[in-house]
Length: 122
Image (cartoon, rainbow, N blue to C red; front, side):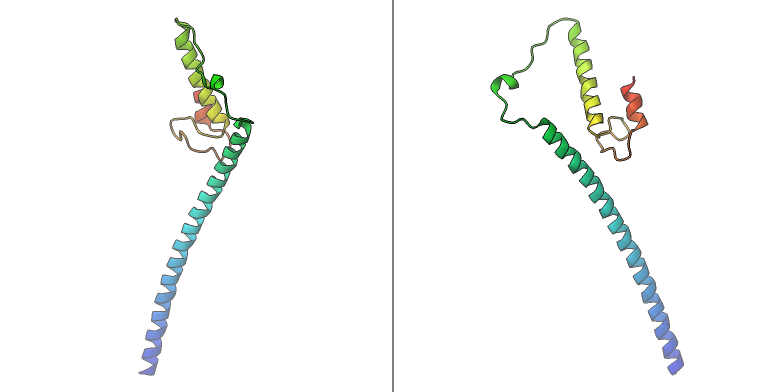
């Protein structure tokens, strides 16, 4: 009888170890995801800080600085709008964000994106 109880006890311990192993694997995946998110947010935070330092004025902008720029009327106006859009997308790309339809708005973490570059070269 004692040998049977011992075998049952060992089997229960083995089951508990298996469950512990499974739980540990799940926790490891959660920690991995958290570390990746932390790294992504750290990089994004650094880029935003650089952008703020670069664009932060020494004092508040005056009313004349906030006034819209007058554009000439005529056929060239449509071309200016396209140029402005292109410039905005190029600026976003150089700030470290995707402008392609695949990852639009996501932070670029692995260098240049071929989709974005092909979009800029069109």
